[in-house]
Image (cartoon, one colour):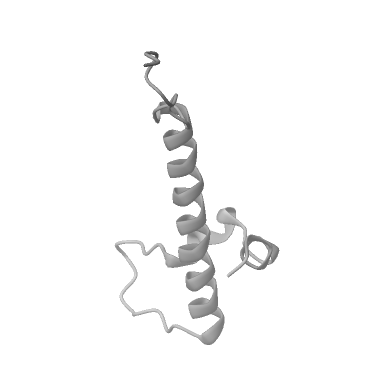
Length: 74
């Protein structure tokens, strides 16, 4: 799934529908809209984790290309 498809209809501020208070006695009924939103949340978080992983790899990874020859020419 492309990032634009994930970010198009998803806003992290709207994630409050999944929280349940202690005084709630009924189970919430999941609709197709809820399932779609949960899928977008999962894809968005997977994208964020991948972007963070790539940034950490670039920031703390070794040099991208090693020098060839090692310095001694025979």
